[in-house]
Image: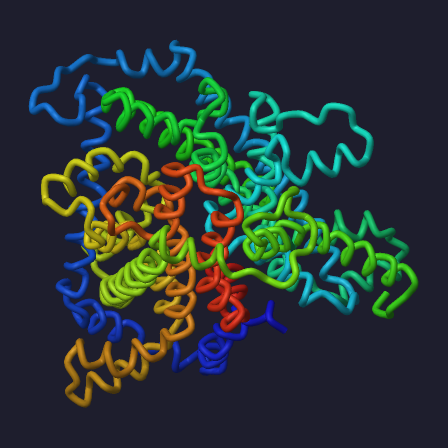
Length: 321
Length: 273
């Protein structure tokens, strides 16, 4: 019911168009287009264009140019240093570490959220009676602030927190200091983000599942296709748009990760959980290395643009095959 | 396969158990927030009767009451600005078929790909030079620009799918473009307007990164930043922190449960566009 809402919202407009006889639809279109061309004047878009140029495009361009300087964020003079900041990003241990870690976090989240979200969606797309309650429960964390969940899990994973208390009760001798050990802390961060965001991945898969024709599934099962075969040959191809959207969204969100890291570990212990975004802020605002911070931002932008473009083309090619 | 079988029951039980495990953090937030200040232990034991001291401390000492009000004000004003500016622009982009309008449409689409981190540092310097640091207006300005590409993207798709006949009829009857927009096009875009308002509103209310930059330490903080400051400044006990988290979550959860259908539909449909 709920899942249909985006479809039903669009339904009236689609049906009026479809019900118009072909002749009346196409005949006057040439004249219409001529009138339409000048109907809405450009000034309608001017506030948006001004804001966008002033506060998005212009600072973005400046960001690129700053990454080639040694600006400290305050002083009026800055020197052009060529690719020095970029060489630093890929040679200093904190830069290399942050880039690698960001890629690991984004890759893990891509896999976990999509597998988890798809499995949850498939389970809720059955006859079970509690599905609308379950959907609300799994989705609810997505509307909460990452700060709320960051602190909640910082508490849960604290050395003397509920999780370790539970482990002690189970007989585990010395439960780990989850957020105090570099490798474990990264795993915990990935877990927390997955816990928060898998619900929204699930919602998009659920919407996608509504476009799988039920009679096709029934036909396949009459023809003797097992559950797995039905899924791979009938359901999966229909999910292609949802898969594309989810892959791109989870990847971008994963690459940009900031809030949870900032709240749970602050990038520590000893910079071992620093991601590109958190290192960028630390370098620019704490150490006044604006140029280095800007270079990190450019690296992040290029990663996001290249990886989402690659993903988009690969998924599209697979779909058309 | 459409009947409720034993297998379905098994699946149902598995999923309910999973959901209960999944919801444990929610239980902890509420439970710890209402713990009495002298409780020892990790917060798993059910605290009854509920103790409102923590909530009061967070509200008064943490200044959370004012911060939540700030959050709500910023969210409402910014969302309104995004909607106003982008609906007007999208009407032009969707209905005027000229080379200029197509070029701008592509320019705005490009903004969907552009990571905000790139603009962050220069934008910070700009806001600082404007003297807006530490005021909520910095956020309103930044958000109004930041969410334009996303909002315009959804609006243009939706308006293009609307039949143009009513608008043309009104135009023939002598309506100017602004009146056609206000009386005919805008009411028809209601569903997508609601979707955008919900998605943008949630994102702004929960945002931590932007207000941390522009408002930290100003006394005008939005709630997520205020909680963060509160926690790191004094070694605040967990129950008080959790009371703060609960207070911060109440407005958004209330909105979520009141508009559940639209929120979930928005996430599914909006992101799918």
